Length: 192
Picture 1 (spheres, one colour):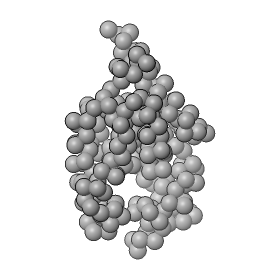
Picture 2 (cartoon, rainbow, N blue to C red; picture 1 turned 180 degrees about the horizontal axis):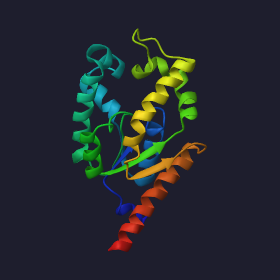
Picture 3 (tube, rainbow, N blue to C red; picture 1 turned 45 degrees about the vertical axis):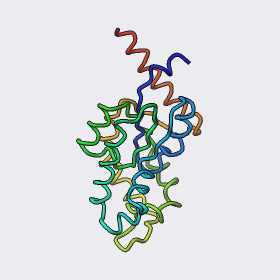
Picture 4 (cartoon, rainbow, N blue to C red; picture 1 turned 45 degrees about the horizontal axis):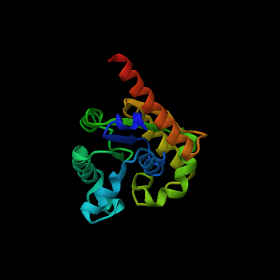
């Protein structure tokens, strides 16, 4: 399709953990004829350790340094959909960099839906564990997600596009992202 040729060379998906970046990303990439890259997978491959291991050994600051470096490596990629980690663009440096180097799409999910999706995954999510590395449950899990979301939401909302995904299937979410990108291209073309 002609509109695809005009798409940005890098599309960064952002949003809270569990919002569907790693699920939507490959399907979006396939629809565009792009390659999909999960930033967390790149970090693990380069570090030779899992993200929980990186957190256990160096804490969140060590992980964020690796994440920043991995994000910068995407600058040379063309025709890529890149799923960023939930906290990757929660800094002035990283967010402004991504906004300059691609189109940023926020996959927005409600608190209730995030709690539902993340409850079974807390064992594998270091930020959803207590200081003894035990997964949070019930009210404690909800409180942690709500607090983190309240902090991160203002960063996410600075994306070029905000796509509300509650009630949408994965395929419908991909379509919603494509619509947002098409609308952007159409408005850009009208200004020329």
